[in-house]
Amino acid sequence: MDGYTLIEQSPDVEDYLRLRVVSGLSPKTRAGAEAGLPNTWYGVHFIFDGRPVAMGRVIGDGGTAFQIVDMAVEPEHQGKGLGKVIMTALVARLQSHAPSGAYVSLVADGDAKHLYAKYGFEPVMPKSIGMAMVIRP
Image 1 (spheres, helix red, strand yellow):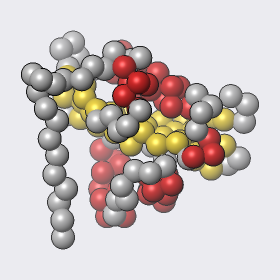
Image 2 (cartoon, helix red, strand yellow; image 1 turned 180 degrees about the horizontal axis):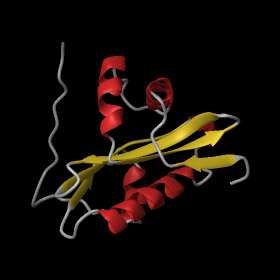
Image 3 (cartoon, helix red, strand yellow; image 1 turned 120 degrees about the vertical axis):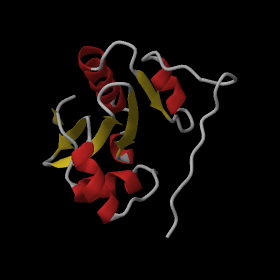
Image 4 (cartoon, one colour; image 1 turned 90 degrees about the vertical axis):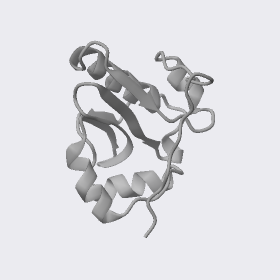
């Protein structure tokens, strides 16, 4: 992983917003990012040539429920193992700092489910089904 440096914190608001869009995730508002990023339970990002190129975060209540979110890698840096290193860091922090019995969830888009399965994540259907809504203006 020559040239890449893993930083144990979320990227700043500008880079967070940019990484979401360039990696194919839904865009977020500046106000939303400014409010949400400080509440990250644990976050990491990769720097390459002085700028963030990949990220991942864990959010949650710190005790019973956690969610892995914002897994994003710039397209030109995909396929180099950055996502695996990010997941390894996030899961290691959860295993070392989250209380026993804590529930950890994530939403797997497309083929990302194969990466997440390597870290012990399993589909919850048919016992449960994921549900979501987006707040609209």
